[in-house]
Length: 323
Image (tube, rainbow, N blue to C red):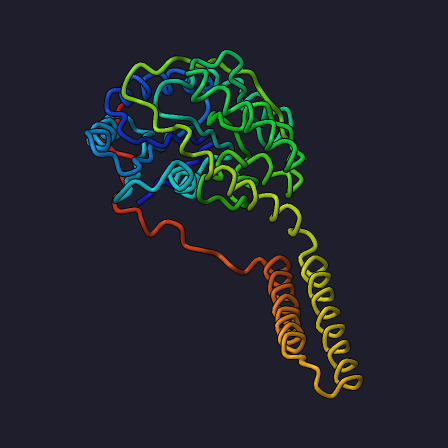
């Protein structure tokens, strides 16, 4: 069972086929966090790795008292892996980072200090990014600009996984698909105080990148979702009610035009007008009840989805740990 010991800091690291990176990563993370002299834990989330990543992580958990490991039965993606770590984390401050050694664990204390200054979310900014120009840097710059324009939250590096959060903020941010890059925008709905922090970035030493141009369409779809959530979040009934009124008006106008045509010309065909009126009327009622449902969900917050049925193994603190 999970330990009930007080934890101040939780470091969450998703892993996918990073067998060569796990050991040096854990060494670097423990070295950095130990300097803070605060109770901490490290959660490794194995996202269905096909190599020895989980076996190595599980072995490390047996010798590191503060290390926990979560395993997915298959590869679900970085966002679900982060969400699983966030759900199981016990710290008051949560740190997320990549498991490929490109993020520098030595930056973690700076994030903790920034959170302690009163910020709710601190986002890493890779000022000297060590990635390919065409396939990584340029698409990232375009995406960051677009996300800032659409969401109204101008972050210079949304794709940097090295971030810090207050527990009560991040655990109430809905995350799915590729939404981890939109955390600042989603946090803004809650009025979160957001800061950016320059961080180091290293070239990948082992394995290969799991990102590429193929993810662009996912980012665009998620961006549309985020924009919709931000726009509807505080006033769903107003949005849906306005649309319902417009289609109700169309329904009334078309049936009125049809009635006038019938009165003017007995042989007039009004099938199209009647069909349009009926469809518009039905859509109006659908939008109205959708608005009522969204308003209830927003006001009561009673809908909660179980996002963790994919977890098949959980390794918690080990009594044999000595570090």
